[in-house]
Structures are given as C-alpha cells and as structure tokens.
Image (cartoon, rainbow, N blue to C red; front, top):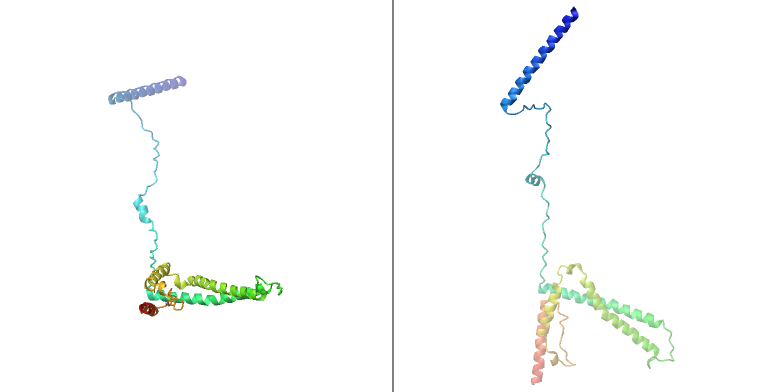
Length: 233
C-alpha cells in the first residue's frame, strides 16, 4: 500500500516538473520570436585583454639624451715673417753653414790621411808622373776640400731642423725667393766687373740685417759709379 502511494507521488512530481519545463520553453521561444532572432547568452568567461607596451615619442627620447661635446676648433695662424726677422734667420743660417764646414773639413782630412797613409807605396814608381807621396798628399787635400764643400749643405740641413724655425713653415722659402729677386735687381751688372775688381758680395751672402742691406746697396751704387766714370774718362 505504501509502495503504491510512493509511486503515485513520484509520478505526480515528475509530471509537474515536465509541465514547468514546457511552460518555460514556450516562454523563451515567444521572446525570441518577438525580438526577431535567437537569444544569445553571453559567456561568463572574461576575455583577456592584450596589453601593448607603451611607446615613447622621439621628442622625449631626444630631450633625455645629452648633447655630444664638440671641442672648440683652434685656428692655426701662421706668424708673419718680417724682413728684420728674416734677415736675422738668414744670418743664423750662414753661421751654421760656416761652423759645419770646419768639422767636415777635418773629417775629410783625417779620412784621406788614414786611407792614403795605409796604402803600400813604392817611391820608385811614380803615379801619373808624380811622386807617390806628393800624389797622396794632393788626394788628402782634395778630401779636405770635399769635406769643406759638404759642410755648408750639412749645416743648412741641421739648421732647418731647429724648433724655432718650424713655426714659419714655407714662409722662409718665399722670403728667399723675394730676397734673391731684390738682389738680382739692385746689384751691378756682371759684365762691368773685372778680374782685379770683382763685384762686392755678388750674392748678398753677408747681409744679415736691414743696416747691412742698405750698406750693400751703397756699395753696389759706389761700384757702379766707379766703373762707369772710369770708362767714361
């Protein structure tokens, strides 16, 4: 008896549940028809947003960078070479040439004497018709003369290496050219000289100051007047 009652109550419960589900389904279908389309349920799962890294403008980066250090440009100004300074330099050059000629001459003499003195000499056999000892003496003297000629060239080369001359650069060569042009323009014509009376200081080698240059001009004019007046007389 109890079993039959339990079965009947279970059937009534199931039938009521079916009726409720049918009513809810009909209500949902009516709502979807009224809206014109099926109802779409939103998922409860939250969409993950993609984070993009922040971008910085070029203006902000350039403002944060420190400006590059530019060293100040130093303009190399060449010191002008005046005539008094040039003539003083020329005098020092001549001194170096004269001083270098002395040791070079001694070295030439010593080298020639050492070489020719070590040769075997037969006094009975002349060399080029000259006594051997005299011939070797002439050769030794010639070696000394070669040293004397090489000395000024070596002295001029050493003079060029002086630190005090490097600041002038090529101005010395330009002044040399201009100086020799003035010498060639103001000196006496070489055709007027004679073997007994040469032109005084033809190349102007003794000029080392403005005072000496003026004296050289006076000597040239004096020599010119003397030659011309003597020929006219």
